[in-house]
Amino acid sequence: MKSVRSITELREQIQELKSSSHKKTVGLVPTMGYLHQGHASLIRAAKEKSDIVVVSIFVNPIQFGPKEDFETYPRDEKRDLAAAEEAGADLVFLPSVDTMYPKPTKTKIAVAEVTTGLCGASRPGHFDGVTTVVSKLFNIVQPDYAFFGMKDAQQVAVIQQMVFDLNFNVKVVPCPIIREEDGLALSSRNVYLSPEERSQALVLSRSLRETKAAIENGEIRTAREARELLVNKISESEIAVIDYVEVASFPELLTLEDGQPIMEREEPVLMALAVKFGRTRLIDNCLLSPKGE
Amino acid sequence: MKSVRSITELREQIQELKSSSHKKTVGLVPTMGYLHQGHASLIRAAKEKSDIVVVSIFVNPIQFGPKEDFETYPRDEKRDLAAAEEAGADLVFLPSVDTMYPKPTKTKIAVAEVTTGLCGASRPGHFDGVTTVVSKLFNIVQPDYAFFGMKDAQQVAVIQQMVFDLNFNVKVVPCPIIREEDGLALSSRNVYLSPEERSQALVLSRSLRETKAAIENGEIRTAREARELLVNKISESEIAVIDYVEVASFPELLTLEDGQPIMEREEPVLMALAVKFGRTRLIDNCLLSPKGE
Image (cartoon, rainbow over all chains, first blue to last red; front, side, top):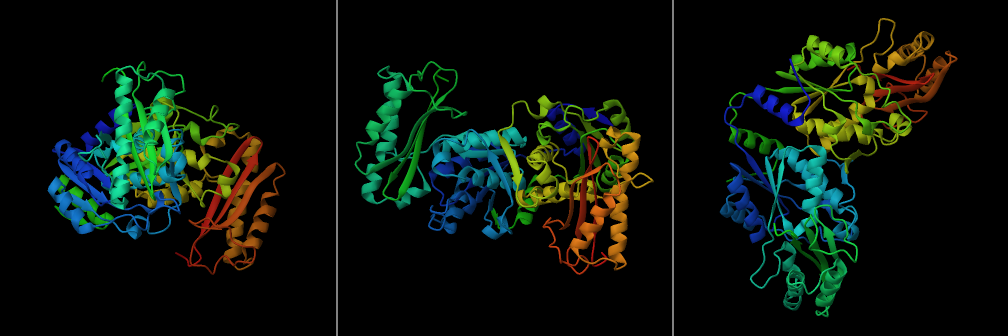
């Protein structure tokens, strides 16, 4: 009998006892389907890092609020399968709602603090739904790596926190935002946009880009100035309705106080936006690494 | 590329892709230490069912209320290691609080409904602490089986619910209550009892045994009669202070209404007690399987 005190040592000992000679690694890309090039980039990143790539496609009802778009969320299984195959997936998991929730779940995973601001404030219960379904997928697939897009930066922070707190044996790999040539961040919800809204929505990426430049060239310095500049630039679109404009530490997601300088910090700073165009709510963000990392 | 819709098929496919030729099974016995013959019986059950037996010993601070006995909970590592070895453990995991909680956890797992009655009512937050630490242990050890004593029947129900809802790839194995020859259910907390309290505490197992007999021989029939008989019998001890006396469905843990007959049901019925003797709170229970299973 052996006794151990550290988590790493325990896992190594169990692996050794199990003595699987050649262990293949599994990468998971959890999606809600309607795959676009953002998802494809996650699948390619997974392919590069792991032996087996599993893509899950599941529109998770419990992360949608009662007035949100669960019913109308775009779905196209046939196209998704082709896109997953082309990007290099080995296995696609397409569970029904009944497969994932044979009975209404009595168990919920809640992450505190990182879920209070940003989308967590506008979408109560949303992140409990996300962490609950992601933990189910982790338990089902038991991946070594899981790949998430940085477009949902708060989701990345929340899942990293859950993985840390619950000791999931999974490495979360955040992947860069993929954009259209004109700057619009890819999103399955972009299909909701009318041509006019689609064109106005460019104000999101533009405001982030220009504010970042203004910070980097020293025109503005504090969190308050950054928020003001972002709000002003977004307001150039007459149909944009701001849900939030936030400047916060990452991954803690603590709001920077008005006077705090953005570029003289240890931690990265996230500038994040949620804005409605017509009935469509879009999010976008930009991560600033003050020390140039 | 393959696509699958069922959880079982996905897990099989991943296993096949990983192609581990000979997979050894792991059994986990999570404990808070101060091992007694109840724990030993769990370890022996684990040994019988799995190739590798992991015993965890961790007094989990987040499942204790502020006025409970976290600080004074009995601990004896040296004796525990000998007991684990003797019962057949292969690996003992003895993490420090700092190993399990390097930072205060922001993530909590909460199971609704099954946690509202019984100990859940008397110990608010207790089961969130239990499910959170058990999920951490499941993620750390990744066992095939996990063994829990039926003395904490509600704990068994709560963990089974969590495993079901979150798709943990773990089979929960409930094991029978182990008793002293005179009937007292084994508990690490029995060491707190004075000789007088120890002797009075026999009223717990006796009241359960006699009520069970009264139900089986038809003297009493309804949930209300069972509760009354239990309360009367416990009250034969002058120092017994009842926390709860409950008659509920198992594993749903819904209180049986007063008039409901106990023996004409599909589901098993749990008679459960929590009673204080001096400063020591003891629990005991008896599971009735109406259809004789």
